[in-house]
Length: 401
Image (cartoon, rainbow, N blue to C red):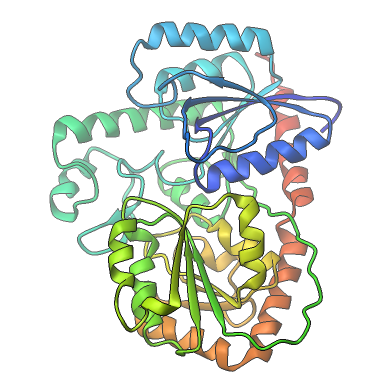
């Protein structure tokens, strides 16, 4: 960026999953380059604290569809923005139409659409009764499809307001903000929802490149690693089924937390696998370094269309081969037969076959890992990400408000 820039990031949470990890890393890189960052958010996670090292502004519920005492809270937002006087506002997971309308009217703004919540009332873009991707454009017909596919609240009193507010947010962004997405797949989703190609910018996520130590030759059991929120669409239960068919020398470590954790704990009690599976729960990003270094293969068993799958490029940065479901944007970094293997979502037999192949062919696994590391070096670094973001920020901040 040319000179010092003040950036206000706006997001629902101050901690959590991939979006928050991306934001934390981005702010750290921007800070090292002399730019100042602030975070406006509307919900706290007390058990997953991230050390942001920036000014944070917490206003309860301000980013949510339903914001209580909204007028007073918007006044608080206005006072903070007057005090900060940011050069640009970088909007992330924000769903309060009044807040979006206000922010985009007073300062140059950009929206990063990280997932489907802007264009899908449920946020998963999945027809759950069939577990296949929904290709329909957001509209009031979504409420009718809910009865057949269980893809959003069936009660119109709940579902219709979600559709109405999403459509309003889309209208605001189409008029006022360039859009960032992390994959060509996400770009196709927004094009299908009426966004113009000229307003969509593919700026892929980045990851830091760890220093790889030269491994000394040692004999150890193959270690399979999976990371993610423990919910149905992440496919962890399918991974456990596949693991029953994996070499009995292998061990599996699943890192993550979520509403389906208790179900997963019960599934792990199966005598065939209980001694070979470890559920760690949620871990801070810093603690994952050792786990990545010690694993042999990273598996991403998702059965929903991952917008990108940031854990994949993290695995590749450590030189680890990946076995991943061919869903969403995953194939943009998991190059089948080059950096890993793609499998059909939910195909337990295929998943087990590919994991076993990499266990039995360590030379191929090492080659995939080296290819993956090079791919990250050439395509998914912070320098490349910031160069593209810089061009967009410079273009948007030159607009007069």
